[in-house]
Image (tube, rainbow, N blue to C red; front, side):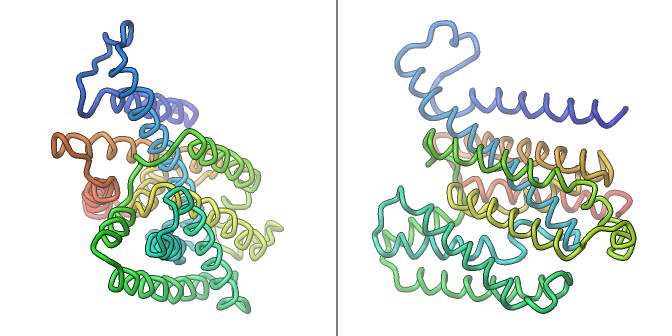
Length: 319
């Protein structure tokens, strides 16, 4: 089977899980009801389930794309959108805004703002050797621990009510977005994807080693910096609206690489689609694990991703 057909199949699977997700959850709603929706069913479908599904779909694509790019530029199979401290900084920004009692509608600005600060910190710390993988990872770890400590401090000094809000946000959720925020997420993903896919041939050459890429005329440092900046900003936008959701950005690129290979033209698309499939699946699962309650999607995504990682690393041939 050629790669175009594999991409088409992944796209169809993503549409299928999205359709199934619309009919999962509290409230009796089945496909045959679509022809004669009452007011309650219309509210459930268009005001609750469709926004949740759309958010999970887009955030999944964001995490899949960002994870694929990070694993490529860092040449690290465990890299994810959050390796360099972006999620930790965004989590601190959201926690700080919640502690200060700022409107929930402005939480995203706090998350994005501090995520951008983390990006700047990583760049400053590793400025001299920014293109070197070890320098970037060490700088990211330092920034991550710094903001994780500040987030723990926010939790320690907050009231019980604020603490519950902070913890729920950090667990991840796709149930708090509105159509405007969904449009921002989608536009951010499309713009980033266009910018990244233009450099797909350069990213492909990086997979065969920096020396090989340089011999082909690729400015390795510039490609790494550009990709890191773009992907980090995209990740911060996703985190700001959906909270911290792990594992998707780690496992989706591995599955895409196994299915589509190293050609970034297909690999980036495949990783995005697989990320969407995994997160929409996790969203549906979060609504049926405990009937009548929706578990945080970040928890479910981790529970889904962990077995996949074990299967990938221990169930077959490693990369």
